[in-house]
Length: 479
Length: 96
Ligand code: FES
Image 1 (cartoon, rainbow over the protein chains, first blue to last red):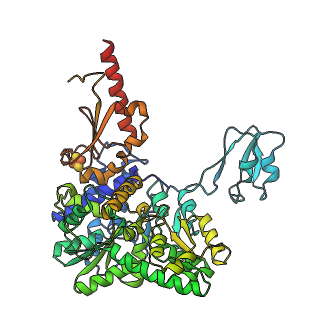
Image 2 (spheres, each protein chain N blue to C red; image 1 turned 180 degrees about the vertical axis):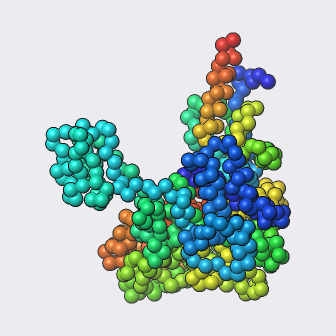
């Protein structure tokens, strides 16, 4: 996985801010087709072969930010202005959540192993003798891998006495925990959406920024501009995402154009309570219970771990319960969930609990585009009950299990044996398969798709170390 | 302006205005943890609200000031380098 801050996401944020700023100034329609050129003027230095390719890439990034599914709709003759107008006209969001900018994809090598110049062409030749697929031959005393035969087993690398063989992974493929990423005939990345769980890892791992979320910023911005009444519901992990206090962030969100603001941590309390009841029932039957608040995990269980389905809690997510409250309180408002998560976009489409989903990065772009500095905002409160620390701790790994535990009866608590799966890596998927088969000595499994929990989600702004500090401070304050 | 040597510390001011924060300043707030103690003793790290540098289109956030020097598009490495430079500058001034 790439670091939180890198050049690729810097450009994405810059673009988002540009688009929104120009949109709120009423100039986007005129300006949008000029952005790729303005970002890469003549004689500027380039990332790729030439400024023209750089400009083309900016164009695709803008398309993804407008919510276009580039695989389905890629007409090079079509001005961005038209894509913008289509985005402004659309009433509904559709699947899939991610989109591949295939022109940005550098078509990483199919064979993940390279024989370097350190190869001495030795006599023993353990690489070629032991290759199970006969993929290694010697040309001019130098080992060579036949890319048609190689199956990437890695045996040659392990056996070479000179360490002459290196592993060059394909980051997107490597990062996908469910094998949904593959390459087409040209070596370009494609996503099998039947398998995809919308976890967002590929997007965060591609060094070329060739996978992006289809953003909904334009949809939300146009509602703000048209004066639609909007209810924003804010994920517990918001703490520490912006400078200043949580209450200042609340004020900033309102200033950005959201009329009502609810705390999803309130919904998290409902989730924890209901999941505790469910655990008690499952426990009585000697069954396992797995948490259900992480939508990427729920999708992974459904699509990839047959036996797990019966054990995943049927309790809804904090987003769902908060949206329910939102509908009760303000039935005519559009609801926008704001959080750190990519998979929430998919969840929103599955149960239509909310109308739109933004991530923190996108919210930050709204602030900047509208000239709002959180530090300058005076403090405001949520329009529902602000939940205590326990519910807010949902955002970090271990937090959900702890919240469920505190909701259990004393008797049941004694037998509560939680196990945390921190991050859906391939290894952990296998571990969960073992758990589903009843082979682990635990009765409650908390699963977070993102390592570290929601505070490490693909849509966060803040370094998780800083967030942890703020979370601890919040704990003290609310204790 | 010449900094006092020996007693004076190097001022590292990290902008945590919203623009800088969103564009990556949170990483910079971990600076303290990443500096070796020897250097840590010689710097004075503070956060500040918007320095108004983000209003200028030419320079890019996040901004950090190391004494009087402005670092734009700052990251941990560029800040560390600037601190080093200031430190060796001081040494030279001392030697004179
Ligand atoms: S936010 Fe840092 S200079 Fe304005």
